[in-house]
Image 1 (cartoon, rainbow, N blue to C red):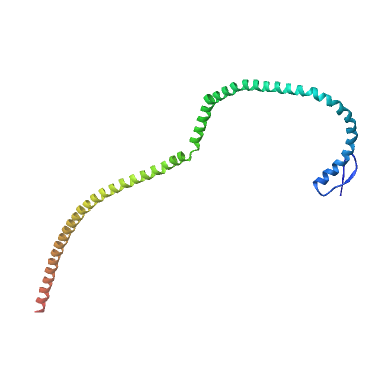
Image 2: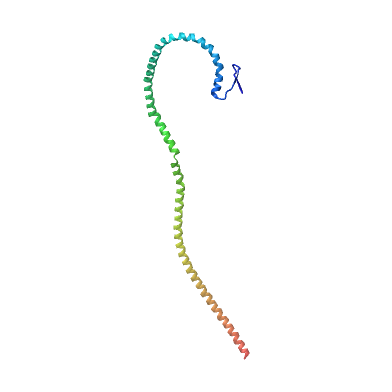
Length: 193
């Protein structure tokens, strides 16, 4: 397996490790860099004396930077304090009330209490209706018992009267039948003699 680099168009064998692959890719580039390094070495020799001139400028830049940072901190501290007061006095109460409202809406205890209220009311209403019905039944059953006693007494009286009337009629009919039978018996006896 081989890897073709697009710029150099050189076929380089691909090593198995990552470090080997990186070295294989860098070796053609190192060859191209050596002419540039030889051109830069005279410039590097000229930079050496400049370093002595740059060092005081770096110290000066450090001092200016430190001063600017201090100035920025002096300006930013009251602004941050003012922002903290604004958040504390204006924004925090609004956020707090918003969070309290959200907590009240989300609280399952409130919903569970309101949901349990209707079934309990229905249970107590049914219980009250049942007690009222039992009291009414008891009162009516007492009245019914009294009315049945009265009705039974009247029925017994009526049955007794009817029995007396029936007995009287039966006695009258028995006497008639006995009189007829007796008259027929006399007649038959008279014929037999």
